[in-house]
Every structure is written in C-alpha cells, then in structure tokens.
Length: 327
Ligand SMILES: Nc1ncnc2c1ncn2[C@@H]1O[C@H](COP(=O)(O)OP(=O)(O)OP(=O)(O)O)[C@@H](O)[C@H]1O
Ligand SMILES: [Mg+2]
Picture 1: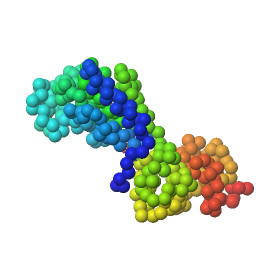
Picture 2: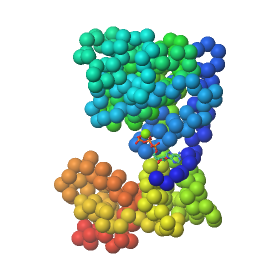
Picture 3: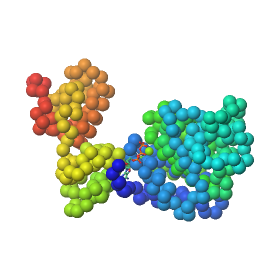
Picture 4: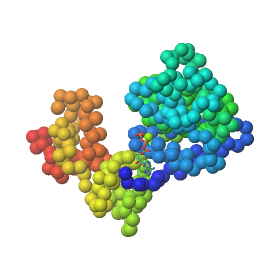
C-alpha cells in the first residue's frame, strides 16, 4: 500500500485531545468520541492517529472489532481479550472463558443480564485505575451483545477510560435499528463527542497529491479532476494513486475507458445526452426511477463528472450518444 500521511483532520484530532484531557484530569470519568462516516472515509486512520497522539499515554488499551461476518456474542470483548493474560482477574473463570470465546469454555449458563454485568466487570478490572482507551472499530458490524456492552461502558460511572468508536452509518449495518440506537446512546453519554467524517475537499486532495508527486505543484485542473473522479474519498484516492503509480499526475485525469461502462449504463448515458429526466429515462428503458438514479450515480463516478450535464458532454465527446434517441 502507498504510504500517505493523514491530511485535513486537525479539528477532529483536537477534539480527541480535549476528550482525553477530560478523562485524565481530576476525578476519573468516562469519555467517548464517536466517529461515523462512509466506507473508506478515514475513520480507522483518524482513530489510530488520535490514539498515537494521546498524552499522557494510556496505561491500558483495549481494542476490538467485529472479526467475522456473523460474530458470536461479545465478539468485541473476545477480540480485546485475545492474547491477554486474564488468570489474575477477580472473575469466575468459566464466565471469562465464555466471554473470551475460549474453545474449551463450558456451555453457557449465565443469564444475559448477568453476562452483561460480568462483561462490564471484566473491562473495569482490566482498566483498573487507568487511564485507559477502549477502541471499538466497525461498530456497525458488531453483534447485539457487544453493542449493548459498548453502550453500557460509555455510560458507566467513574470508568477512567476514553472510548474511541468508529462506525459506518447505521443504514449499512446488519441490524440498522440496533446500531442507530447504540450510536444515539453513545452520543448522548455525558461529554460525548460525535464526529461525522465527510469526503476530503480539494485542498486536502491537493495535499495528498503533493505527498505522492514531490516537485512542482500538481496543476489545479488535475487536482480538480482527481477530486471529482474519487469524490474526495480517501480510499478511492489511494487506490487510484496505487493503480497509476509511476505515471505522471496528468494521467490521473483520464476518465475511465468506455469499456468500464456496462451496456445499460451506456443506454442511460445516451438518454442523459438526449436531455431526458430520470423519469423519462426510466420510462424509455422500462426500468424503475430508483434504478436510474443508481446508474446515474455510477456514471458520474466512472466518467469523473460532477453533474449529469457534464456526463452528457463526456458522452458526446466519446461519441457514445445514440443518434436514434436524439430524434
Ligand atoms: N485524511 C486522510 N488523509 C490521507 N489518507 C487517508 C485519510 N483518511 C484515510 N486515508 C486513507 O484512505 C484509506 C481508507 O481509510 P480508512 O481505512 O481509515 O477508512 P475507514 O473509514 O476506516 O473505512 P471502513 O469503513 O472501510 O473501515 C486508507 O488507505 C487510509 O490511509
Ligand atoms: Mg475502518
């Protein structure tokens, strides 16, 4: 992977530092920073940069994420416990083995509420006098028991820990309602900070290009084209830069070749070039308006266009328009 250092998240980093100062100053208390945003927008990178920058250093870091598609209960805790010596913890070994998803764990014999309390006690025992950081990656993919536990920890009294939580929007979750409710619970915890990451702006894209192409500044037209082509999404940006490694920045401008458009997309594009609305396109091609909007957004991305008019112009330039449609 191409090493690109983080750009454009100074405000967010400052908020992490402020949250940590609240946790570490004076009376022990629990803090929470919730970072949401689309896939690849930079949640994980931000959380790891924030973690690296914390001062004083946390005494304990418990970090977990959903590890499989259909995780077992308490998967976050099991991930956080993995490789840790839990022999000294003042908790029933059977329960610990179960929470850690130990292969030899006895069959479940705890009521759900009792398990939740044991899970909280386990975290408390590991955090001790703190200060600790609890990292929860990909909250949207966690099992319901872990969601419950994370909500409980964020509102736990006097837990000297900062929760750093990253999540895609609830709509993308397996259980959207449960994730939405957990995000609301976390955001409502006293002193919680909520950050929603948007795509990078043009200056940030320019800064990334500057890292990859040292020397004369990348021309603004190229920055603009790359920003449009990637939608400012850091993941897409890094992927593009890796794919075009070794070429000149000007070559990043080239829109996707026509071959990458599907037959249906070409049909939709020629309708756009004929000046049709989404409704008219839907009627003309015998598909739903919703499907048309999906095709149009894919077309904008693939052709590197900022609007349907621009995509239509692109089609004309590529001689992709179907004269029959233009009457
Ligand atoms: N602000 C940024 N500046 C430069 N590069 C970035 C920035 N944010 C993210 N990246 C890069 O973009 C890619 C995706 O970032 P990251 O994995 O943090 O996204 P994410 O939001 O956690 O995605 P997912 O929802 O898939 O977990 C990584 O290669 C990362 O290094
Ligand atoms: Mg991530």
